Image (cartoon, rainbow, N blue to C red; front, side, top):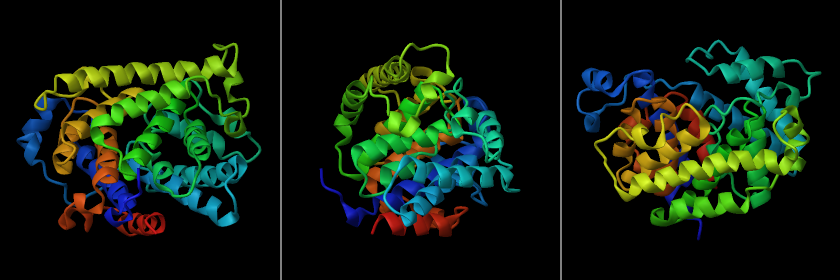
Length: 340
């Protein structure tokens, strides 16, 4: 695969993420009939005015800021990344703009992270595999120059700061991998197979350099390998459900019925991928399909937009949408940084 800088994959993915978030914000917590009554036919859903995002985009930008600070300070290390990202997450927690129905896991973990004397592993919510970590991880798949080990370790570390369940770690790693593959020209027809191979290759690989003794914070596992394998097994099962759904595609049916509602990490990944892969060359349709679901519609559309934008680049999104998305200037700044 060759990086296609001319398509501006970082811009496409970051703006797609925010646009999906804004499109799905008004439909979250609604079932499909209620959404259709509110919006009309799902294929004609319009971006709200104003185009306001949720904590999904806010925390994506917090992660991106932490990554940028870490890069400015020198070579990437676990400690060098954890500090700035922790600072950005706690700044988000304290911000008056943190009023977009954020998840309880993020709130609990970030509250604990505000104590500078606390080891971040003691703040991690190891019982939660909610989607709040993988919905924000796209920047890890977009930043250039990292090794595969660095990308995987960073994806899992940023998850573990709040969501320490092994499935949250694996799903974040797999989401970043999907973004990276698409940004670097992977064929969509082979994407699920590539992700499944990656999951199998990493099934018992515990990134101790990045996670330390996080695995010991649970009473379920005899070893770090058995801890992380639980997460990869959940993700592999979700990918199997996704592959089965794509063998008999049903674009007019709520995708949550086959791959899950997306409140938990592996379901968010699988259902967002389904929405994208049903319409790989129709990015707005993919966003609308994800936003018109019975599940976690803003996170599903956020991830579907990240995948579609990484695949198609900045041209995926119409100017009259991107020019009015909230946080547009900051999204532009990171797109310029990572598309260089």
